[in-house]
Amino acid sequence: MTISKRYKRQPIHFEVIPIIDVLFTLLIFFVIYASTVAGLSNKGIKMKLPVATSVVKEVKGILVSIDENSEIFIDGVAVSPDMFRQEITTRINGATDMSIILSADKIVSYDRVITVLDDIRLAGGVNVSLKATQKAETVHEKKG
Image 1 (spheres, rainbow, N blue to C red):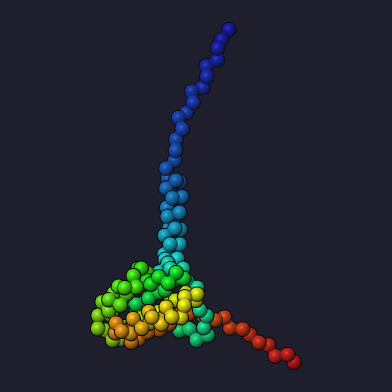
Image 2: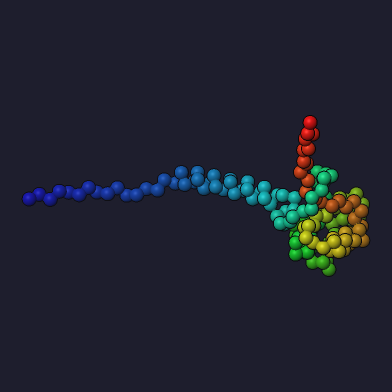
């Protein structure tokens, strides 16, 4: 009686090149996604802005944001209310033509927005714009 020889199993090989290709593709996807989300105008702060018809394209300058919890951010960095005026004074640094864009969530109280606007003006900011979202235009058709 003869015993058949078993075939010797081949060792398992992991192909590294396809894994690198997949990882590189995922990396590119996440970098692009993160840059579009974080690069938005509010620097990653979730806000529901009021709607206006006469919205102008965003200008370059200091972005002051007030989120739904009434927290204040300067260019995406949280600032305490006590340090806000000092920080904005430092950022303006005597430049009277410095643009300041103030964006506030639509549920923030009017009193809070006025307080922040007052602090900006007392710090020397005179070129202040309020940020809003563009209102969608409606088309009315004439009935004939």
